[in-house]
Length: 342
Image 1 (cartoon, rainbow, N blue to C red):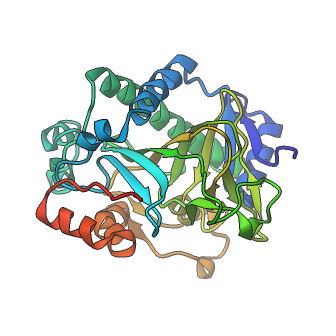
Image 2: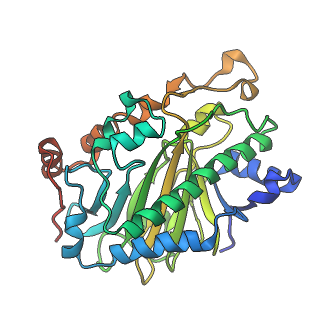
């Protein structure tokens, strides 16, 4: 199958290349998912982090259990995500933006927003922490650059989005998808119809402004959803990063840029590794449709929303929708949670 995902040379787009900007605009309005090359992130920075985190995820389960969040926080440390039959669908390591409240405040975050960082990250080695911080910072800057070229592609000033100075708000997730060895529960064949595929991650659009994603594996398990509801694979292109439009960017552009709905299906002969850096501006930023994207003041599609209001309750919302009773109990009691597997 030919690659339907638009490949953008980021440096060319930043230089004003008309073809690159036109392709970016079409992709943003049509699918909300692009792949970027010539993005300036050194390959050794990408590989150093993903090799290190991949080695941790490849350890035996008993050696990873101590890497679970000590307070049961669902967005810190290691955890496994089984289906209702106890079969492993997803393994995840989540890294908070800061290690401590003091670190967050020292970086300029208002103390009223810093309490979440009282829940510590879990670092198996200091070398992994250093590699993660280096990659995270590179991905954060890529998000800002892509946002600026999206503005140019929409014939707006590159500074139209009021991102201001840091600290930006981010979250950082690494997902490891197992090979699916069960005969039931959905097909792993690429020839299967969309509704027959085994889903390892349910379809959704991110709540960020932009998400910068790296993926590696031996099959095109990540899929984006077309406007007609069908699915297109997002191929693994060496050196490329994937960028998804999040719902907040859709809000900023009054619906001009489509949120990139995506999912992950099973397949392949090795586990599939991906990392996502979910980028937002400062948490005290109000996101509302901006004037260059509103042709008629009576045709505003979205109400203003404070970034903080979109992220402050995500733990409770996650547990309400997806949390199992023993996981919720662990969180309420401030103790580690490790899912039981079949």
